[in-house]
Length: 311
Image (cartoon, rainbow, N blue to C red; front, side):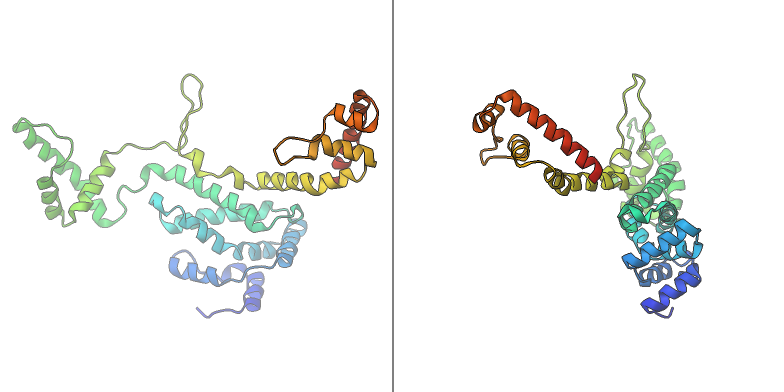
């Protein structure tokens, strides 16, 4: 495939979004083409996202999807250990990417890449859950041959062991060697297949127990809740309120009220202790502790109003 310059690829992506990338029939060609697609600048991303949101512009949607195909490929590689085909993982991740593009709001103040990660992972997780019971049992021709013959050969070995008045659930070294020679595979492959066949299924998302308690399964750690877009936005909002928001709210107070709030709530000494107490402030200003408490209460009310307006 001829390499495209950044501007040419962008123009082609908007004119005919899917002409740039080959089908998943040739996975290497697909990955190579996707990795050559240029990334959108923040201004381009905002422009395309608004065209999609305001005018349902499918060409703009295509441009957004194309520029993030390499993200899907990168994330999908993290799940190759489950034994599922890489192409299938990419396809499911692409479904998540398209859902993210459809729901993306350019006015939220985050880049599409941060928002799309959650949707891509969620779609891949769902695919793994649906296909877990078929994962890594027999994926190659040799493995399928081994899978379908090992069970019957083990039954023969068990019958011989029964005649010899011995009982074993696993193959011994001589039996493993015999199976390997008969099926023309490596002894290590026989051991691995026997382990797979003897292992039970793992429930990724277990149902609650009879006593109503929540069961714990691998699905609990498949997803990273801290990377969920809503949680990230809330975290950034809290950080902004705790820095710029507090500073803005303090500026609305008179000097005395500001000092009282800072001494009571914001000051931390080197030994970890806080600022002055109500009685210490009362002595400093020559008023009662109750009066300091009233000033503090009025100042906090004023600050809460200022923070609400800032948010």
